Length: 216
Ligand code: SAM
Image 1 (cartoon, rainbow, N blue to C red):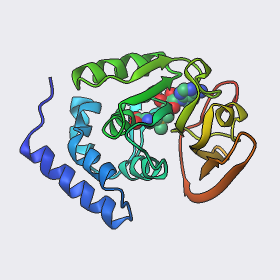
Image 2: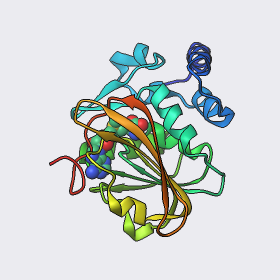
Image 3: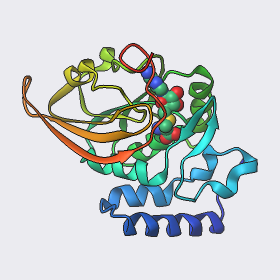
Image 4: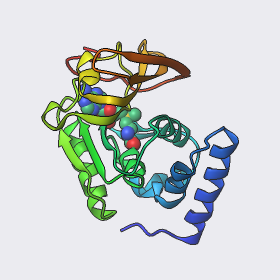
């Protein structure tokens, strides 16, 4: 059982200040980061690292994304409290908790069974209730589609067509796409069933999206 102390709260305030300085403007995202105890997602030995603006290993060769990256991707989604959101790459579950502070309708899918089970425990401990799934999310989660927003938290070789199909008209997909080394953050807005507007944004370095429409 990990506790949330005044010291942790102070460290979160300092982290939010850094994110503001780096250009994050969505107050709901900053508020979520100020409220969520990121140290709950870390092993006891590494708690000191929880409020640095850095990605950190969570086992199985995967990482909890850097807070700036989480804030940046979430801001790009332009979330509404009624949005139905799909997250691909649950990982630790932290990004999912940030989404849940803004909308209760969050679906999340993880390909690694060990991490999936760990994330379920974290959700239980934090008393949050996403719809969590184990499986290959590189082609979305068609059984619950369509979604208002889709966020991919692993680097993809290309934009999977299935994800565009699972967006509602007016919906937004945020996905890092590029080589295994670096990826460009893309925001794709679905204007109508056949029209899309694509924006190419900052460079990032994500772990690879695996699976049928990911890296083999
Ligand atoms: N959102 C996570 C968090 O808040 O901790 C960080 C995710 S980590 C950078 C990327 C995750 O994507 C890893 O946990 C990895 O196992 C998962 N992943 C990779 N390929 C996937 C796929 N095809 N479907 C679902 N998850 C996948």
